[in-house]
Image (tube, rainbow, N blue to C red):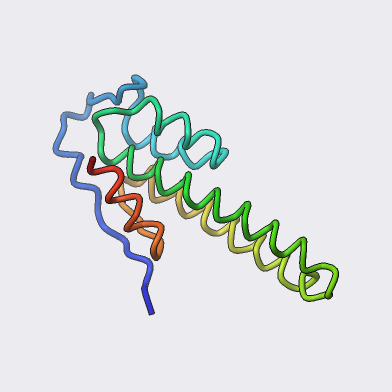
Length: 127
């Protein structure tokens, strides 16, 4: 079973005054990419060109947001067979936990990797 990985951000080797392409501190940009995921994450994916840390959080937030939308769609469709009645609140709780943890870890300067999504985000951010 894949565990959620918590990796300290090493992009803080930059000066404390370092800014991203958006003009924000990298930690603030990472937090904001999670704020209204997947909308704000898409903005940071399109705007950020240099900071791999911000790109990682933006891609992971984008993928998590899409996964949440898909999960809600499936659980809503399953309401017909009553299993959605139980599944939808679980999707809501899981998305809330992912959202809060993503914002916290982004602001703390940590690279918090979700299973599967985190590896994809790390690969895409490295391009």
